[in-house]
Image: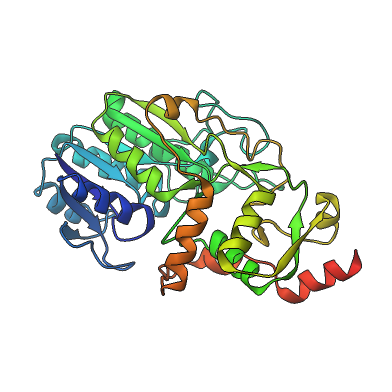
Length: 337
């Protein structure tokens, strides 16, 4: 099996490359060489996917049985279209890492794989789309929907679209789980979003990587929502963070209306918290039927903490700084209760 990973040096792309090598596959990676070192054992090709000469040079390293694209988030639909069109003659199949943000109803409504998508042309530039007043839809969602359309235009029924919600695990670059782990370690009274029994659906990066590679050899096509079918309660999540870090903390469960009144930014200042009805109501039954297997989220918490304390650090990414409430703001809110 010969595969091309677009990206391949960090988080999901790195796990895909490592997993593919462990299966005995031949792996080529294509990236700019800026975000991390190439995995030992791959055949690295460095270049810019927006540069036609670089794409032409990449194509000479083919053919491949499948392309797995983990890096389209940084590029406009027209750039995804250019890459998919140029690589179609040398690739049999395309597995595209997308997002639940492509859905019109995200995050307000429960979603299935058949829910309608945002409308974005396959040849749109990076300015297409908008972000709504309440934070949805997003320009990001429009752009990713256009990227899906671009791949579908080039590959048709030989394309698969994986739409994760939140991906956690060793190597995380966004900082959601590492922030909660560090907050748990610090202990004390911890501002926590009620209800404590709210179930959340994050998936482990290693399980997404495994499923992506399974789809590389599958005959399936179309979209798959990638969310944890069982999930975990927010209480269970924080208890696991406290247990793993040894933090002597006590969550203080605060009604969402009070958090909103106090100006707590949803999704970032308290990572994984959002009041919209559909945010943790994404059906992944099609993916489960196709073989998605998700380890317990407590295992993800444990392994991420081990990675973190052993010196693990993600690549530099601007989204890291967005996550986590300032200690002073948290203390002020807790004192006001």
